[in-house]
Length: 417
Image 1 (cartoon, rainbow, N blue to C red):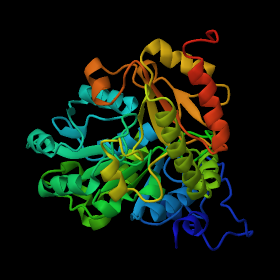
Image 2 (image 1 turned 30 degrees about the horizontal axis):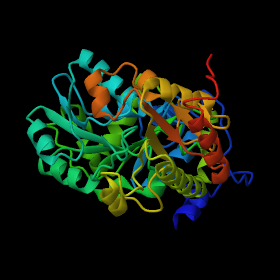
Image 3 (image 1 turned 60 degrees about the horizontal axis):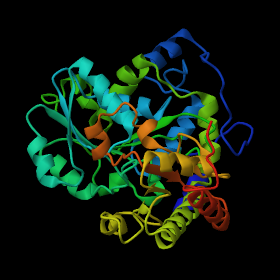
């Protein structure tokens, strides 16, 4: 199926009892079985079924099946948030003494997570994205995974996933890619060689900021070796399902950051229009970026779809159907950035991306607040930077809103708290 057909039809159960066109919300913490023997086998993973929503739930499973189909993997695990999905993805294979090599161009919350992992003896080494020599040099005998974002948030650098995957696999390491800002509509990282893909489904997948969630998908292609990944030793027998089997039976179950059935249902509602929304939002982002760049040459505009972007050529090769729905502008000072944000009348001041509505934020004082100055610079976070997540509104209205706000930066009175 092509994308817009797949988001509507793929992954659904054919045997829904009453003919519902969407999976029902199974808002139950636990599930009864006919016999004690059957419940025992479900608990011991020897029989499919449901016993406790922290472990599995029919509504959540329907969402997982949908994501698995769209990402082209073998199985998915949905979590309570994007950060929970990342934490599960990492902790499923890491232990004290292990290291992560990652692109330095990351969402601030992910940098915070890596800092937290230091308390468990897990070290992270940051390198410049797409700097292959730096990646090769950073990898050592303790490295256990490589990580990057498809489109850095908010630097908007586009990762050459195929090349990075080749480096990882030559060193017998898995590549984990955060695909939140691109989604499977623009690119399927697993097809380019990534081994695990993670999405913060609170963003474009959900589409309207109605629920927090995250999901990870395994390609099933990586050959796990118990010598290098001893925590997987008991699961190697499951072959391509080793990674997911360990997660289901251990880390995911025991940490307990499960997705609620209600939020899984909201995601199933939102995902049906993912392709339509992304098409519109990517086009709106391109037109807004081009308009600002043409109309206000003193403002630095960053968007992968512009030829001025250092990552435009990679984006052209890797992304299909658009260049993403996020752009950033630098307006000269932090004061100017706040002025622009405060004078917008339609765009919302919200710390999210992927909404149907246009959202703006000042990353330096919010999502990257706890990053060091060095980490901010590597992630493309500056005091005068404004991140814009473009919505589905009419582009003429978006442009008009930014026109009046930009013209108010140096006049028309300050709008403050």
